[in-house]
Length: 70
Image 1 (cartoon, one colour):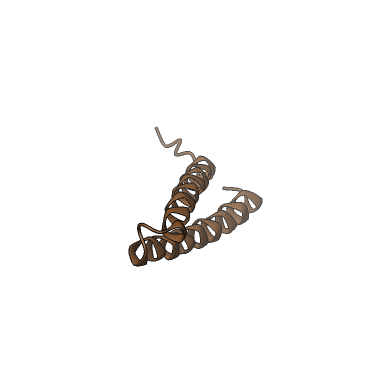
Image 2 (cartoon, rainbow, N blue to C red; image 1 turned 90 degrees about the vertical axis):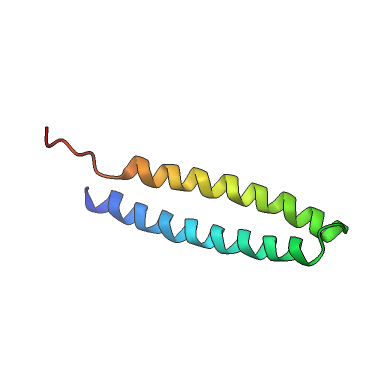
């Protein structure tokens, strides 16, 4: 992989990890208060974070080197 793409993939990996941490924080908040407004809002935000994390993971896979050893 060329160096620029590798650097981008590394930055995306760091962002993906940060999104995962934020999602876990929201899940803990939901577990503490699942039925009040804060818990409901945290659950919705966790879903958005998960969606963003999946998109970043897809981008990381798209940047992975292509194996042409056939």
